[in-house]
Image (cartoon, rainbow, N blue to C red):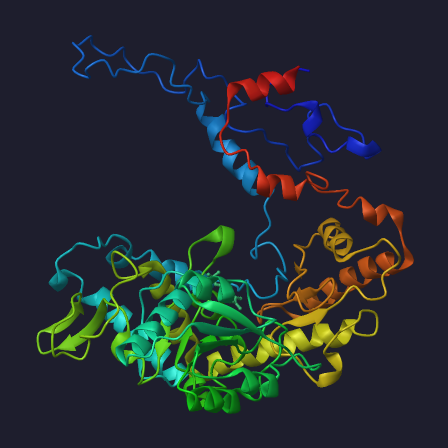
Length: 522
Ligand SMILES: *Cc1c(COP(=O)(O)O)cnc(C)c1O
């Protein structure tokens, strides 16, 4: 087999398994195939004419390159086309509804991008003198003010760079507080339905992780929790709303019971988008909670960009919060970067990051908060919950909704594979949705539900787009229930069919070698 001009190889086409026959180019209509950049063009050519370098005596001590550098050699139009072609094979919230539960793929208003790109923010350097970055410190300080106000918590640490990083920040503060009172403890309790990052963070901090069971209604089993609480428990990590898309109504009772044994309550606030403006976690007795700015206050994330995970703290934990933080003084805003004996931050556990945090995320989040206002943010939460319940009630006649009986859900709707034809699974439905033009929902999570399907529509989706998604979902589920064999080999219309995802995860091929092309061309 040969590589043609566009780098296409016949095996790249979508004709395997007797599917639709390949075209000459491998393109399917206006959906263009694209090879790796090393496979198109020619490493011996270059798109730029460079004058020969003058001969100079080498001062590299024998470390000169002694073989071709092997960079891809493309013309300007070839290089220019490569990236848009690849990007068209991707799926994004800018293209359609992105129903990924737990991840909250929010619409990112263009206004955010405009503000984040203002030269005064975009061109800052983290090591600029403080008096030249008063505006940026003002953004951090204002955002901190709103996060404290919205959560009803007295302190916030802005520097953690993701939700999981925020969990680490919260647990390190809890550990410092316990050590400061000479009472180090060994155990962290985590509900069965928790996001994987919760037990991972606790284990990373050196704690022993123990599960708390859930009730039939998908909530923390308060009696089981109370029975386990004791002087060895450092903290309880609870997600509220939880990863079944349900509010924990016993949160205050849980917090009271945890505090009664001298332990702390960590709340995973990744789902704050469902309650922002409606509930203040501080009123529920929470000691530390991370906020995924990229889930609650827009900003693209996942493959689309970085996140930010500020952590709000109760009075009890605030003294242990990490550096740095912004403080208002008589001479303007300053960045407190070091512990000072006798000052209120003398007990800080240290720092999480080299600089101040994700400045680009801060500008986007503050823009989002200010452009929505208090009433707008409340409506964000209400619309997120409304959209998820519309999906839940439009599908629960066809699909098993494990906690559907226990009342409305919050921002995401949970279904199981119960009732599919023999041999059909959640994975088949996910792949079938790709043929319908949708990114699949979250699958096989939370683990407490067999064949879980967790659907989260952003609050910005219109009824028309929800109806289209529901129609597609119903059609695919009906095929899974009827045992339609064609669904077993979906997707049929995507650039690739079913990939060996386990092999890709276990043995990723991350380095391109010329020999791979040679082998493939055999
Ligand atoms: C997304 C998420 C996290 C982790 O947040 P990252 O920003 O991805 O590190 C933790 N818990 C829950 C419930 C989440 O949805």
